[in-house]
Amino acid sequence: MSKISEGSKVCIIGAGAVGATIAFAISMKQLCSELVLIDVNQEKALGEALDISHGLPFLGQMDIHSGDYDEIKDADVIIITAGIPRKPGETRIDLAKKNVKLAHTITDSIMKYYNKGVILVVSNPCDVVTYKVTEWTGLPSTKVIGSGTNLDSARFRWLLSQKLNCDVRNVHGYILGEHGETQFAAWSRTHIAGVPVEEYARSIGCPLTEEDKIALVEETKSSGAQIIKLKGATFNGVAVSVTTLLESLLMDKHTIRTVSTKLNGEYGMSDVTLNVPIMLGAGGVERIVEMELREDEKALLQASYNNIHEAILSVEGL
Picture 1 (cartoon, rainbow, N blue to C red):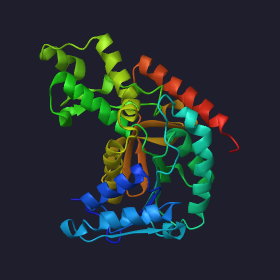
Picture 2 (cartoon, one colour):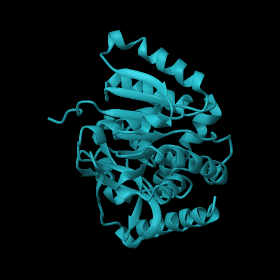
Picture 3 (tube, rainbow, N blue to C red):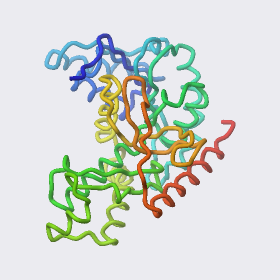
């Protein structure tokens, strides 16, 4: 059974709602021995570290503290959450030029002290920022990943479980492509406990029509915006999503997740970051899983490629 390596260290850059909630989720699961919060607002980072630390007597021993970029040294995973939040009605791509500049500053600060570890990008627009961080660091693409559609895939699975009235843990499906407007469901690879989803739906007298499928994907796609409209920000779901990725990395679990990574010929695509199934372990991306897609799904993946490639070109030089 995999276990967390002794002396594991995680740094979170950004102690806002997302970063602080990720830190809290990490403490609840006791995923590392040292957790560092880094933020331009040092008092906020210190306050969050203290608040979480006061619950440790009920959880277990961890060293949770605030710090500066010199703490990056010897970190096993560096999580970038800092960024300008998405406003209601604003697309992730609208954020690109603002957040890419900020990400460049953060990346330069990281690389002054970086000597190992995986960089996990959560900041939006996740795919574009992940591509640029990979470029700026000069690290192998296996060492930089974006949280991407890991949460979108979870939202999709939850919505399907509600539609088909079954345990969400038996629902398996993937949201591929862009973490944003052109994302799509790989329906040909969606199943309920090994049974193709269409077959399962028919067997329980609840057939999935094409209209149903379109509605499910649209609801998945708009889930983040809906939450932002209702409560101002999303952070609980993303915190759980990120901690599952962190667990795979720190415990060398060889877990397959849909996350953003730079493609180097996989799916016939290069020089872009897209969300496809990837095996994660202690070294980062162990393998990109090239699943066979239907022709319509290949076309949707190409549409995501085109959208992200254009967005990457739009922030060139920032």
